[in-house]
Length: 110
Image (cartoon, rainbow, N blue to C red; front, side, top):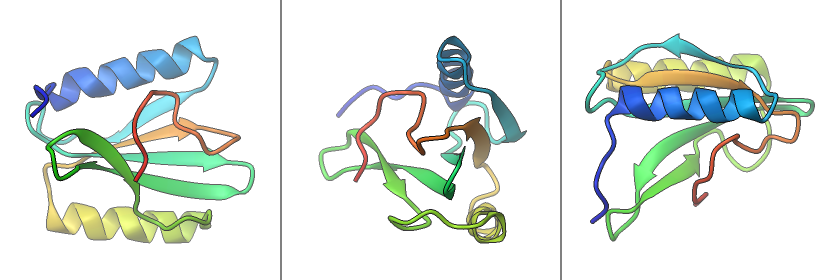
């Protein structure tokens, strides 16, 4: 099992990587600074995708396209985020400008 990084540190890292790549990013909602889960909203030309932080069967960090394989409109992304926050009030929500709908950080997509 991989060691886990505190959520607040991971969010800071992801925002810095986005900045280095020339993409804007912003924290839309702060969650638990130590153990909160993370949702990444990617805003692109074709719509939006929400990535949800998950662990695979071996405990490795990965990302799941919570809104599906196709981009959704802003209302669809907002509805997904609202449902997830209702289930887990410790969630962080971070949004990135991603014209190609690719995250500005490395991660396995499931």
